[in-house]
Image 1 (cartoon, rainbow, N blue to C red):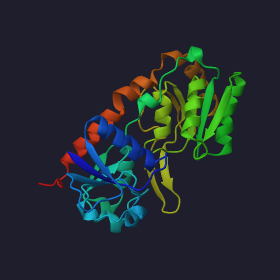
Image 2: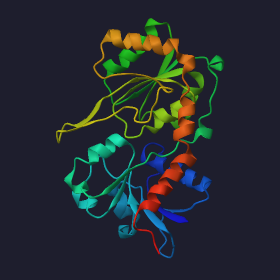
Image 3: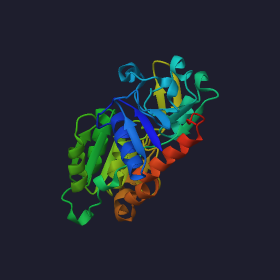
Image 4: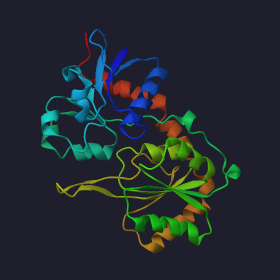
Length: 293
């Protein structure tokens, strides 16, 4: 099998990481990948567009060949674009529910697919060898919310550091998880949440301020959502949106007392490795109707 991936995003975050990790996973499965730039004389079995829709023209691609598009096409569907395709990738179930609110997605095949995490790049390190306590991962929330997380550590005499989304390198995150025993996630909704999954893969249990819904103030859209759409009890503890101070402190106490009982890396290894997610991608791709004869 040979797959053409249309993308011109090479950033380490978001869409760029989806491309990077999908390609790694496919290559581990022995799949040949042809990526951007596009060669007119190339042959392929499937064509997949991973690029943001604003980049299509720059890619110079004939998108009529695309079997599958997504998951980084848009935040919400655009009718003029959605009408051109049948099969779409979205990163999680709540995003699929959100897309289902749009009439332009009626009759479309919306496939839930997360990209895999490169677990070899995020190795487990035992807590006994670490110098620090907590990493606060902060994304698109108020300073008050971040301060609440910091106060949880201060009140218990725990050391902590903070990384803000968009203001750190991958090496900085790797350094932080190598030094900390656990993380506190102070984020809004995540369509997938690659960064927190890298944190989990490194063996750090997470205390999560859960965001229960996604909303677009401009359009008045609202949908149930999550800050950690891929999760089970091995990953840590969540506190619901709107929880009282007492409830937050009680949950954090439970989290700390049971820190050694969590096994977040096992969750990633069972559900979100490069190979597992690449195989899910192939299964979805082969279910489309656009394979070349």
